[in-house]
Amino acid sequence: MSAKRIDGKAFAADVRAQVATHVARLKEESGLTPGLAVVLVGEDPASQVYVKNKGIQTREVGMNSFEHKLDAATSEADLLALIARLNADPTVHGILVQLPLPGHLDSDLVINAIDPAKDVDGFHISNVGLLGTGQKAMVPCTPLGCLMMLRDHLGSLSGLDAVVVGRSNIVGKPMAQLLLAESCTVTIAHSRTKNLAEVCKRADILVAAVGRPEMIPGDWVKPGATVIDVGINRIERDGKMKLVGDVDFASAVEVAGAITPVPGGVGPMTIACLLANTLTACCRAHGLAEPEGLTA
Image 1: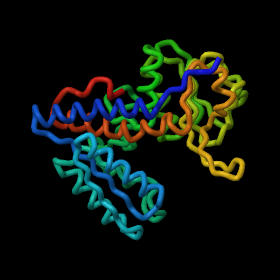
Image 2 (image 1 turned 90 degrees about the vertical axis):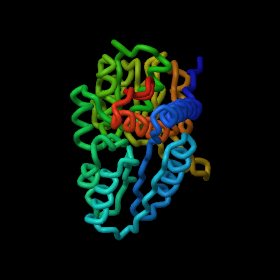
Image 3 (image 1 turned 45 degrees about the vertical axis):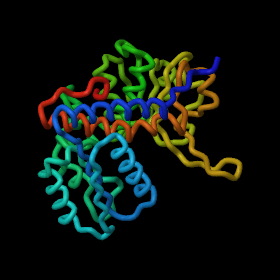
């Protein structure tokens, strides 16, 4: 029996609609408009498209969008000065510096210069520490989106066996922390894990975030498991470029209970959760109740 396909596009559209409703209410009741500042250094084509889409979706939900496009040769001092100005700007509630940065810039230094309360990417070391110790934090967007979809499909996650394949700071590690907070039994696996197939087979929840195209075949999936495929890999097949995940969808869909496709699964949730984080940051900055269902 074929697995249920978890429609990330539809889910993301619903999240954006919820954000727009909250933003309209904020404007009406408090006179506040959440603001998101995105900083792009250089002219990486993929980053340019991503930043453009962020700006469009930010404005569509009624937020203010502030875009800062800097030359690739911008000095570290000038970039840090811009971040300092955004930190001090009360109309800016979220700050995102688009990665990757040009090689002469220290990404860790730049990210940690952002006010943790405005760090809507959730990459600041303070937010990493808060999340890791179970405290209120800004949560990275992709893991937050995965958690939202899991909650929606499964309800309570308590007691479930979860395996996260991948140990990146952006997805793997924060995903594991979120699942621990939901009272899952969590294993972090990776490309060097011994008996990786057996580890994956015991998972009620399998999150693939290792960055290797179709690395996980269907016979590594426990029958009925929920599979969240975070991978986005470009491969050539039959003379054409194609997007595939870290899971072999064709075989996994015949075993899993539910699975996210690539494209159209986790990907659309990232910007939706960025908007949700900006709304949350605005509410926290002004001592207002956080939007239900849009936080970890």
